[in-house]
Image (cartoon, rainbow, N blue to C red; front, side, top):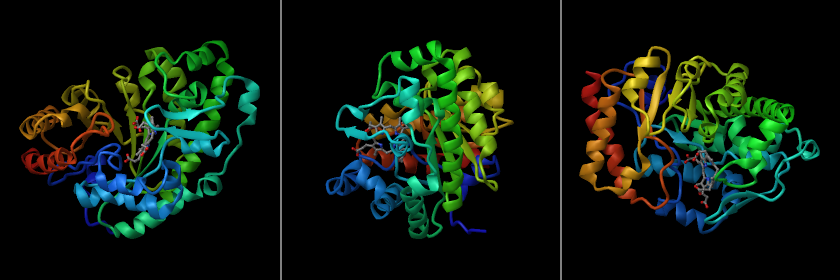
Length: 349
Ligand code: CP3
């Protein structure tokens, strides 16, 4: 068994006692950090993802600079469609673009069936190198997009306002949608299992676009596939975090798919959700990411509000309700981490 110097995050994931609330931040390795920008100035985004030395370096930056309680491997959810044969362009300002989106059966047939230990070996190499360089300081989190969120990007081809193309697919060609979601689920469970095998101590599944579905469609096109992934995962007791943005409904069902932790966005109240499902899962979140634009006193008050909303006892992992924004002041992010460390102790006495 690996010995970790700081396992607060893993203990909180299992609702075991902790001395204080652990914190990590979604998108903590990113553009708001000048140290990230310095690496990024030398290599484009995908090159960084595909070069284990660079990926490991920026993965560890927030551990050194912010003092967070977990690292998350630097990569992207879109490396899976890229490996399946969809060339990915990361466009400054416009976000990710696939020039040949999947709309028809014949488009879908063009997708390669991949073995993540081969086509995504570079991610696993980055995990192994990061684990070595972290040297047990904090746990390392691996991640994937959910099948639904990956399908959304693959069908839309880019960020979208109305998600018209992926909605046309689910209403007009539901069998094709289900067949793609099934294939993605199998690939993702192989991929996350390989990440755990390579050394990840936990995995998070991002369903960034779960919230664009109606309650009924979420239960048909997103949740069952996340459940399938979790049931197929090869793991010992590595926790699984399920983060579904904008999904207020079906919390009861979400707590029953085998995830150890539910990640919540900032529009929900941690205490209310805890009352509903806190005896089954730990909760992660959920400070509004834009609060980091405010001054430090305001940030501190909001940290206290989030801690109070959850209340006393273990089972809370502090995080933002979505990724840290690229134009926040890194000093505010550092202050956030310190506030959580200082202010959370009294919730665990
Ligand atoms: O959390 C971390 O620090 C690990 C790294 C990580 C990245 N992307 C790096 C990244 C993680 C966990 C992701 C997940 C991801 N990627 C999601 C799910 C989480 C979420 O935010 O909803 C999604 C939807 C994507 C797709 C994606 N990748 C988008 C929409 C963009 C462009 C918008 C943006 O924020 O820049 C990316 C690019 C991306 N992924 C960057 C980083 C650091 C910026 C690229 C750059 O440096 O130019």
